[in-house]
Length: 503
Image (cartoon, rainbow, N blue to C red; front, top):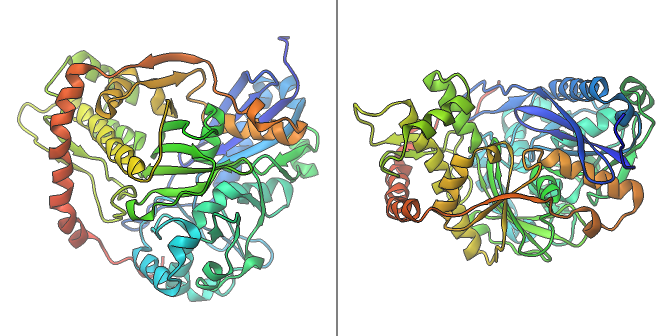
């Protein structure tokens, strides 16, 4: 039996494509990790939904797999922390029964409701620090009120995805300030629910969960859940939205520290010590998961999901196999084939749910490897947009750490570093991501440790520097890539279907 430092904590991250569970000991070592897959339903164009019952089944399966792998470590946990995909609208009735599938963060049906919300509350951007976008929770409720009025009349509680899972395992309706920031119902500067924003959606604070800081305990595991998992009735920390949790796991909590997340979506995240909104550039200004901290982030709706899509589309054996093909192809003309990565629309900087993916520059010589390279470059160009708009928002990024599943690709790292013209830092356990941050928040909740002592940067595994030749080629290609979207924006809008109608 290996030596394990106390306390051991369990981090559970409810993602879009999977639920991941990790065990982390008091020395911040990841003892084990397991995951269980999730599927997304797209019943109509621009729609994106999941059945919350699947979240529970996946979370339970992941924790039971940990129990099989590390029974003694799991039995010794001192606390649980939660992180999860943000913005999802999980609607419950008076008995906390689910009313419909959850509407997810990458759902684009509520564009008209965004405009209506900002007309109803002229100070909305001042209060929330963000422009209303279809991904946020509040416009989704306006859509439900308009298109599913009978169902809306039965809504008594709205929870974010990870907080529905919290309700399932603790019986408590609670959330943290970082995740709540993505609803458009939070006064982000004051870290409190906004009566004006709630009223504009036909709701009040009674429909909202209680607010906590991410490092605070919100309750304890229910007896039946604890017994099923073979653990004590330990406290459950408030946790964080996935991006804030990932940042906590990477040690990105002090002003100017930054992370680049390559998950289903892509996020460039900068920590700060005050509320600094910049809604004009579609930058998100949210609470961080620790008291007295905030952050800014630019969000790309499709990042590593573009690579997964390309692998499936081209019949590649796997994403890893496709990346190997790109490497084997050798150096090609960087930026010769252009890809717009807007498979689910885009947030930063375009705020355009109608935007779609595009390949431009195809020829008889185009093969699978060239398509895949264009995908990697297109996502990197989108991160260049993100970097520029964050600079305009006053974010002074220092060191940038790469996290998420896409962090495993050195090829993508070389492309990103060259496009962004900055070194990128890769740290030990970078692919563990938000679940690690959730486990760290659980440790703070269980022990009262100082956040600065727990949320430290993991050891550097390696640094990828810009390639001068690639940098110059991408610098020339980036304006062409940006022009492509500008010329197609009106055409995208013409293709957008009506967003109304019953399911």
